[in-house]
Structure formats: C-alpha cells, structure tokens
Image (cartoon, rainbow, N blue to C red; front, side, top):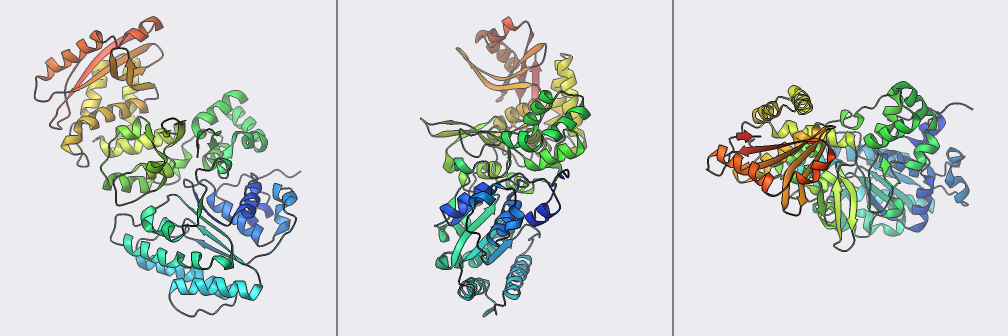
Length: 522
C-alpha cells in the first residue's frame, strides 16, 4: 500500500485525493449538514481547514463520487446527485482598497457566468449573482449550491481604515440575493474567522444557522484525539525516535503544544491541523501557527481599541454574547481574540451561564504573549526573548535584584496605547505577562482566607510571592515595606511552607504617573 503524503497547505480536495495525500475523514459531517438543513455559518481560526472543508463540499455536491471511495460518506449517501455549484472565495487575495474587492468579485462572477453560459444583465454584483442563481437552477432543473470561503476577509484586511465601510457595503450588496433566492438554493455555507455583526450580513441572512458553537460539529475542523491515533500513529513513532522521547512522552508534548481548542463546552479538544502536520513533517516541536503569518487582525484590534491586559493574560470569564459576535465599532475586543484562535473555551458554569476562556495550548500562549510583550514594553523586538531568558535564569539563581532591574528597564515608560488611568492595570498585567513567558507556573490573584496575593511564581525549588503596589504620591520605599508586611500579615506564604521549597517575598512599587518601577524590596 502506497504511503500517504502529509497534506501541508493542500486546500483542494480533488487534488488531495488524486495525489494520495492523507485525508482525515470529515465527510460524515458534510452528509449530516446536507441532509439536516440548508443555510449555515461556521467560524474557525485561520489555518484550521475551512477551505479544505468547503472544497470537499464542492466535490460532494458536484457528484464526484469516485473521490470519496473509502470515506464515510460513500456508505451514507444513497443518491449521488450533481448540483450546480458557485464557490465564492476571498482567501487568495488582499483587499487593501475597494477597487481590489470589486476586481475579485467581478472575476468570480465572470468565471461562473462563462462556465455556465449565463449572460450578465447588469454590472451590479447583486443582480449578476441573482441572475446566475436563478438561471442556473431553471436551466438545470436543480437547486444551486453556494459556498462562501473567508466571507469576512475583505473587511478584516481594511479594518479601521477609510476603505472599511466601502468594502462592507459591497459585501452586503453581493450577499443580498442569497435570502431572496432561497427557493433556488439547495445548500448555503459561509465560513470566516469572525462573525461580524455590524456588517449586517447576518441581519440580512437571518436564516443562517450558526454552527460555530454547536457541540456535534465541534470537531468538523481540526484533529481530534481519536483522529490523531487513527491517522498519525506512524508519524508519532517517527517523531518520538527523532526527539529521543517515548511514544507516550511524544503524545503528551503534542497535546501540550497543539491541542486544547474547544469550540463549545463539555467536548474533547482538537489539535491545530496546520501545526500538527508541520511538526510531523519537520520532526520537531515548533511554533508553526504563529510562524505562518503575522496575526494582523490581533495587532489592528490592539492598536485601535483600549486594552485591559489582565483580560488577556489571566484568563477571562464571559457570556456567550460577549465573545460570539464582533462589532468593530465597540470596544469589546474579546470576539476577535476568541474567534481568531488565541483564546478558547476551557470551562463553563451552567449556573451563572459563564464561559471561561484561556489559551488553548503552549504554542498559542507563547506566541500571543510575545506579540503583547513587543507591543506593550520598550524592549526592542530582537531583545524580547533575551529579556525573558535572562529573567528565567535570574529566577533559577534566586537573583531578585536582576529580575527587578530587567522589569524596570522594560517598563521605564508608559506606552502611548495605555492611558494614565490604566497604568495600575498595565504594570500588574505586564509583570504577569513577562513571568508567564518564562515557562514557570504563574498564579495571579491567588486567594487564601485572609486575602489575595498578586502574583505567585513557582520554580522547581522555590516559590516567589510578588506583591505589586502603586506609590500614589507616597514614599516608594515605605510603600514597598508595607507590601512586604502585608504578605506576612495575611499569610500569603503559609500554603507553601510545607512544600519544602524556599519562599521568597518580593514587593514591586510602580509610579502612579506612569514612570515605571519606583522601588522594590525583598
């Protein structure tokens, strides 16, 4: 039997099947969707297999039965039918102006007008799409399948620029026939990174069934633990040999690095497929998802909206409404962070109806924190990793003075994106952020019977308790001593005394005027 090839970057289902690439079978989901309903929307992070999913749907609705030999849908589908399919994909181009978007829309519509011999009756994109759908259905006697990939990219590319509203308006116009042509449509599926409520696509298409948080479709993209064992057992063994780990240790490392995405509560996590495939190909544990592209949407959002760093680095509780829909005009950045894949669902409290969001895995945590660190501290880009490594070494050596000096240098000036009235939150969050990047166990706001310690950091042989204070016009040295006294008075060290580890108590005092660290004491 010919060995399967890892399908890195392959988004065309027909190409994948004909060239013997490995395919993780998702066709049972497609069968279920096609027989249960018609209009769907799915939000998933970039490089999570959305384009391949739509390409598989396209082949299925075009009736290309031979491509599905040996797959689940081969036995499920009893009536293979060929439908006319229109695929609208915005993933391949950049849309830095309205002109770029208009050109792409014209190219897509022209392609299908020529393919199906439909004559355009207008230059207006809505009229052209309406004509395509109705005439295709009437001429073939069958309803039309519409697949839209990365529907939101033309807006996200120009987010917070002068072209944003023009691109929104053009997309609203393009998608407007999809509701009116309902009787001519057999199946409608839209994918994207975000669900942009403000675009009014979803108010115009209020019949769309959003399956982004539906439990039975949580693994429609990504690779589940069962799929990992079923399809990649040889790759896991080869990776284990290359890295001098046991198979069990290798799987544990894969879980730590690439697993942990939950697209609803009470479901098993899925692995990032791109990172997993790259890891197997290169036979090393790398940060492939972040290396594959700058998280431009994240950077744009952080630049244009006020940010409370603690909401990003310490985990976050939220209602579904708070992270489900993204509105560029308000200051809720949480939907962007969640839908882009930087946070995922880690827990759910049914009584309060609150979800807990946090980083899915180490790859995302480290990459995300590096992006934040480069944006919110003054250390040059090339020195960020060096600064963190120096803190890591200083903590191992219990050199608190060096730790304090590095942090003081990093936050000497308040960044322009942080307002003076946010500086207390800023200093606390950046300290936590830097400590989390060291790889040590870091706990924030750790509760005991007498109060909460600000930051607790654990190494193999030591526990560091950091109390963070603002000087608020007072003598910084006196404030530092008060902070140390608070650690003793409230018994913050008590839970760690039986551990056998040395306990170090440290006070950091920051300027209320945004001038950085004003004192420290141990």
